[in-house]
Image 1 (cartoon, rainbow, N blue to C red):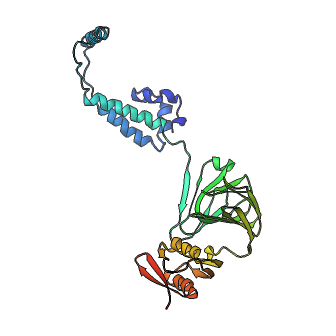
Image 2 (image 1 turned 135 degrees about the vertical axis):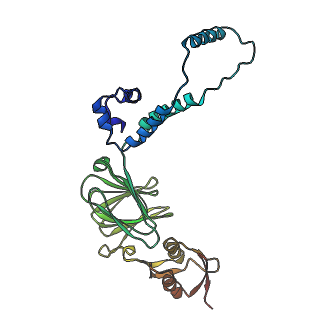
Length: 314
């Protein structure tokens, strides 16, 4: 707000002593924080300071000056200020802080999803993000976006990016940079995967050499670097159709996915969670999902609150 005022360095003082021009008074009435400032100033106006005796004040000043040049002979007494002078000073400091630390106008937009929730979002340039469950995306919705298209995200999301300036998606585990394409990012816990559906993307992290993905290529982060595989780019993402599909993956990974999706916890102490699973489960209903995963593995589950203890079938 302060940047909108003329002579902003002296604006506060001139408002307090009533010397603002009519133009300046009119220029601030439509500001969002005008009402807050008016309230503070009205409280300042209500404060009454005690009258000052000039002769006594001058005499006190001379006495203090003389005392300052000679060593003290006894413990100094502390004089407490009245509450009104302190309150007036505090109000002025509040006003100064109001101007100095008022947000600069950056407007961060953040979207989050809950369990069983997907959400499609349009960015300022017309690009879109479709968020999977338990995911977050945010960006700076100001003029800076036109020059620096950056989205911060957690969880999983599918991006369709309009051509234009460089477009970056930042996660804790890596950064994806594109010019115009569609791609999916999976970023839960210690797993980081990027799948390129159209165009070309660059994937990099602080600990690995960047890789370039083209249509039909995906990469998965591992301790040894980025692993690149082929996938069917003509098929939509599984999560956008409210399902999760796996081919020969450890059961522990499937259960981990279900824990995120349904906000539950599995006790696997009595089973072999390294067994490989191939199959699909649906996202809409926990009981249905459990049946689709446990029956092919010859397992059963006992629920206690949000904890499910797994065991082998007899």
